[in-house]
Length: 346
Image (cartoon, rainbow, N blue to C red; front, side, top):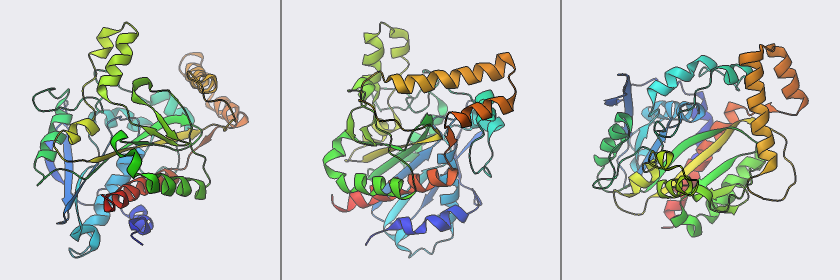
């Protein structure tokens, strides 16, 4: 059976970014944006991470992956069958801001450091919704322009694009799938669900009833949002200023280059709160309860000067756990592998 997942242990052992990539551009603050190309096959695969700079696990996987690929022989099937186009971190400025709460050697995320130092970019700065479509939308930032120009150098269109993301907290793993591919990703959903359960984690299940483009497919799986639906949502709220900040996502941008690219998004939580049996409603009171709890803890740390140990004890008492980074890395690689497998039936 076709199973590139077999290589996950070797990828996990690889040193992050042991090799140097090509400079494809610089950030707004002048930091380099590196990209890597490997392979000579007929299938073009795009992998990016870091569009939301407070989500560090995706960039870590890709930095390990480029090292792993660099050591393969040119006749290895991962290189002879595929062309890999990888940008491990699209947002080095945002990464620099968030490095205060994590390192690449971490095995899990520390709650107090995360709450104290995490920086999340708002609409208008959000790189995921800042990509161009030629003749329709410009780039929001130089970082997205660099990635788009890099994609344009590919021979032919892309077959698979995975944008690796994460969530601050949820009760399980969540996978977003291109709506155009729902009917062709049954095996992908089965494989990712089985891997999640095998690792001992639940699937995140939420039904936003189409809000912002999120439509539930099955437990743990949802359609990915797009910019038009984001804009529509904020316009309905009477917030035209925010609506105007949404440019195309990386998924929409790469599909605009032609072909029928399968686009996927991983959403792995840094923190897991207990799963509760509930009716799928939106807004979800249970999720809002945890959102408010995280804000309360952040306020305690930043303003009320509650001791770090007090917050950690309260989080433990409420059943909050950090999701191990290794589990997140394994599930992100599973999504990539299952996406590759989905191409076989096209």
